[in-house]
Length: 504
Picture (cartoon, rainbow, N blue to C red):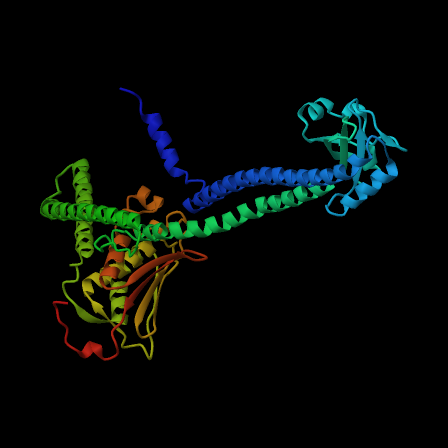
């Protein structure tokens, strides 16, 4: 058979380690990622479109100006001086956002025909074949020293070459030269806007994604709270969650089905435990009775020791069975068979008297602080035996963990609507990693487990009795030792004089 131990270990390790990101964080990252991808892709396409549009518009304006200049230059060919050419050029410069505008005229061989100055561009930079063979304007990006010298950042220039047909039937080339600064400024403005949007967009998407993610996971957070509320004590309560989301309704239904299965499992377990406990009571009682009545006068010491040990273990087993039966009745809510009004002070003193032999055995004192005026008549309603069992378990638990000659303190407080009874010891306290499950069944300190004392059911029984009487128990550590506080509802003043309905 294949070895699955490694796979099981890996699975357990994965379950122990929580996810690095919450669902809300992952949704936010997805929203930011998708939005950023779309935005940056769209921005790139938009930038290319704007770049093409700006250059096309710029070239169209440059071509329009070149056509106007050509109309005025052609009558003067084949000879034109620099002053006349500059005058014609200056007339067109005012119509566009050109930082500079220069013109040159060349013959078919690339020689300048402008009288009185050197050409702005070199003959080798003129694409004569493209211009003369196709007879349409050609735009080139060239380095022109005249542009560099006119307070611009560089000599990069945009040059439009246009063929001219003069009156002497010869073909000439008109070169209109301007700076790229206008197109560069427009593209720089578009680039700044897109870069700013590239940072603001993902930030806005993160805020929106976090908000949307919060809305999306909020029902699941409520489902988590609902699931955390499923405890053995609340297993009988139906799960309900109002939501307009179909997914949440399905998950709620699944949780409800799981709760029902757990409820059935708990009920089956309680029935089994109750049945087994009832079946064990009789043989245990018979064995204890026989061990106690057996004549050990002439028995060898090993046999007598064996009978004593057997009797002791049977007594412990009988106590365990009784604890099981009590816990089962309490968990089923049927433990309070005899309901009456009990004076709070009498309830505590009865428990003190009942636990005093154990305290004397452990050389531990018990120091109760009872209610005083005006709360002397404070009463609680419940089953006397169960309530005394609850306090007995708390007091005995404190006795087991108290140092020698250190008293167990019992303090009572009331506000007229509830009674609080605190049982404190000066022992080692409860380990922080176990304080949350101290009321679980079979929860015991390691020292008690080693000594073999108790069964870890006392606190579970105490909690069940308190909840059966609509009360609570909580445990907390203090500077030295720990305190268990049970809170029960009290009767209104004078209510204890009224008759009780035993069916309640």
